[in-house]
Every structure is written in C-alpha cells, then in structure tokens.
Image (cartoon, rainbow, N blue to C red; front, side):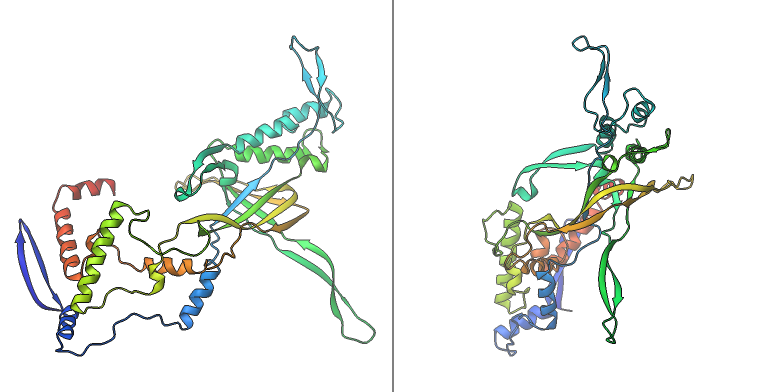
Length: 401
C-alpha cells in the first residue's frame, strides 16, 4: 500500500514511484505524530538458534554426492621378458621371475596375451586412469598441482561397507545367556562405473579378472599378484582459513562492484534511519563476511587386499538415447579400516553456516538496484525489465537460453 503515487515519463518508459506505508509511518513517528516503537532486530536465542548452532558446529550435513575414490593397480605376474633384436644385448630372457613362470611356456605366453604380466596390467591401468593436471588455486589462498583420474572420476557410486561383530551366546551356570564376540564379518562393496567411449575402464577390469584366472590354461594365479587396495573418502566444505571469522571492512579485498554496492547499502541504511523505517537485520551473524570454503576429505576408509569378484553386465538398448552406459563391480576383500583426515575442531568454525544462511536470505535482483530503498528499487527494476524486454537483447536471450 502506498500513501501517494505519481509518475514521470522518461523517454518511452513510465517510471512510477511512491511513498510506502511503512516509510510514511516512520516519518510520522520521527516528527512525534505517532508513538515510536523499538524496531531493533534481536536474536531470539530460542530452540531454533540452538539447533542451528549445533548443526553449524557439525559443519552441516554430509551429502552422499560428495565423495572421492582412489584405486590402485594390482601387482601382476612377475615373469621374465624376452629380449630380441637388441644390438647391445644377447638374445634371451631377462628380468626377475618371482612368480616362477617357465620361460616361453604356455603360462608365460598366455600371461602376455591376457596382459597379466606386471608391464601389461600396469599399461591397462594407466589407460583407464588417464589423468588431467592443472594448477589449483582455490579462492587464491594456496596453489598446487591438482590431478584428477578418469578411473576415479568415473566411479559414480560406492558404498562404505558395514562391519559386523559376530557373537555366540554363552551362559555361566544358571545365569542368563549373554552374547560374546567371536569374530568380525565385513559387508559387500559394490562400485558403479560410467563407461567411457573408449571402454578402457571396462577393459581394465576384464584384464584384472584374467589376472585372477587364466581362462586359457585354467590356472589361478597367486593371491598377491591380483589383489590390490583402494580408498574411499567422504568430502565436505569448510572454511578455507582457520581461526575466528573476520567482519567485513570497506577496502579490504573488495572489488569495485562490492564498493559500489556497499556504498548504496550504506546510503539506504541512513535514509531508513532518518525516516524511521525498519531496515535489514543487524544481528551480529550478518556482519560476518561470506567465508571462503574448500573441499576436504573428512572421513575415509582403506579397503585391503581386494579384487573384482563380479564385473556386471552392461545393458544396451536402442531406446536408451538419454542414458550413460554403466556397469557394477563387486569386490572381495580381506578387511577395511577407517582413518581420520583433516581437522574439523577449529574454534568458532560452527558460526560459518549461520553466516552463510544469513547472506542467502538476501533477495535476488539487478546488481546495485536491489540495494536501493524499496520505493526506488521496485520501479527501477521494473523499468529495467521493460527496457530489456522491448530491446533487441531480448531476442538474443531466446537464442542462448
């Protein structure tokens, strides 16, 4: 509701503004017509704030989509290689032979055919684990080389398995029976992989299973030749800098756009104060600068002595035009153990989530215009929208979406 409304013609645009009811009441309170009231925004410090503080100190919630997997290559069969055509060396077999494979025998030749020897399985692993490296400078805080692997990146789903303490019932004389631990049983691990267009990941797991069982000779290879390990990490966002949060200050790492916006906000706040209108919240948590955040690995497990026991089928269909082919790998392993990464106990870290939540409550709109008083920001936003919709730029937006 507006007390009065007028308009002014600016070119072909009709820009209208008015005096809002709240601002008119504020002016009347300032001149003594209406009784002044306390408009200070105060924190409730009730149950909701307690819950938010607890969640903030726990860094929010763990999202299942934030994870990382790191696979390692199995050892492979250690057999000697045949050297031929080298003018500096006599022809023959050279290298270590800890697997005790007969030179030139059927096992020796089929291991090369199946890519099961150390060199072959390593080459298959490196093809599947094609990496890309870049200089990593998160928010300009630190620098270093960041490497991403295709094999790790294409793992779309993984499960941190369960660990069960097996028990039996024991009884002393006529006392009630009670459970007594007798061993440890680990749950099943299944990973899901996207198929890359070159199918190198699928071919690597085919080669790994041939390393376990030589389907030409019917022989099983040694346990230490085909077992490996991999790590699973959950990830979370925390502040990029430790210690207490710093309050925003003009001229402190601010861009030109931030300076303009803060100047307009300051002028709007002064106008609200002068006319007795309620402004935005001035609670202390809103004074914190939006913190710079980074990903850390907050929890992780290492899976020991594992191998792919099942490599699932790949479903193909002519009508699956909007899907990515995937396959599952079920792992057999000896055990898994957790290990702790990172430090989440930094003092005052829990205030981060509250500050972020406060800033996200701000409305969206055109830069700088939304910082003006509502009597101006609304009409000007409408004028800008009208000008954009009637200009040639609106046709361009239809092309780019």
